[in-house]
Length: 314
Ligand SMILES: NC(=O)c1ccc[n+]([C@@H]2O[C@H](COP(=O)([O-])OP(=O)(O)OC[C@H]3O[C@@H](n4cnc5c(N)ncnc54)[C@H](OP(=O)(O)O)[C@@H]3O)[C@@H](O)[C@H]2O)c1
Image (cartoon, rainbow, N blue to C red; front, top):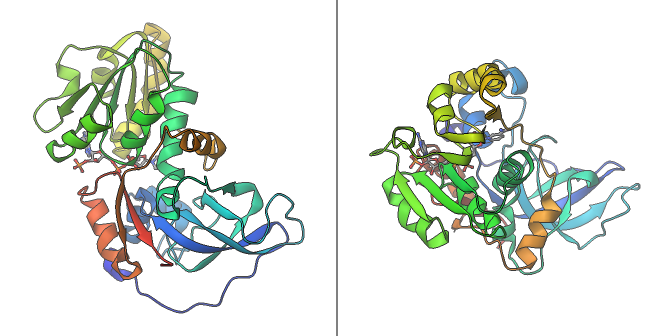
């Protein structure tokens, strides 16, 4: 549980030749952190330790400044403001310093703060990779995002704004519907009152951040040649979609698949959208470092709006 986390002193890390030493200004909270502190779902233990976690400092989405560079680092210098996702290079974002391979870094957009930048990498790229790369969104389409008031959905709707003539429906709990409307969702649905797969409405593209419905139900909500992409949800549903999705695709032409997140791939594209003024994260916070355990619990209970951000260096 999040209460197992303690504040402690560790040695300042030293970057190897391909890494930079980053002084972390801000970090945001993700599903990885919620999963790591509980060891759930079980699959997380297969990767990060069966009995106890191999990762002792969680935290993946960080923004900060370079304080030292390794001998082979060529594209970044001391003093550069950078941001990135640490989920495939050892985590460690709930700290003052972390070493990061140069290959994982992007320059922080000038026009936003570290607090905003820390909210972007993980959720922003799930949205970009789900809607644009795998979803191949096209102008004029009818789109639904399930779990639209969280990190992915609040960034996803802004990414979709560069496409003309879209009709975008967002599904989430009632407390998040006003925020979703203010961000540009054309229609909003409270999932506790209405099951979007029961309305008879059909979509060209569905991005699901919380898959809980059967693969057959979601397939029925797709138009001919429509795509359903899930980023997360119950393990049983994800397995069902991975196994049966391609079979359904074979018979119906509809494409149903699980998104495999590629950390940091496309981060410069997000930076461009930010610099154009098209993308601004919804930040829940900023909060203080000592609040992290409580914030992870708050995240797990789904009470947050957008991304929960922690400011490490004031
Ligand atoms: N595919 C990959 O490689 C990969 C990698 C990392 C993470 N992920 C997954 O990607 C997803 C990230 O989403 P996120 O950052 O946007 O999460 P988030 O910030 O937690 O947002 C999820 C939203 O979904 C809502 N929700 C919960 N149950 C729902 C339901 N049955 N129907 C509709 N909405 C529901 C939540 O609201 P309430 O709680 O108020 O209901 C919350 O607003 C997570 O599922 C994560 O596990 C995938």
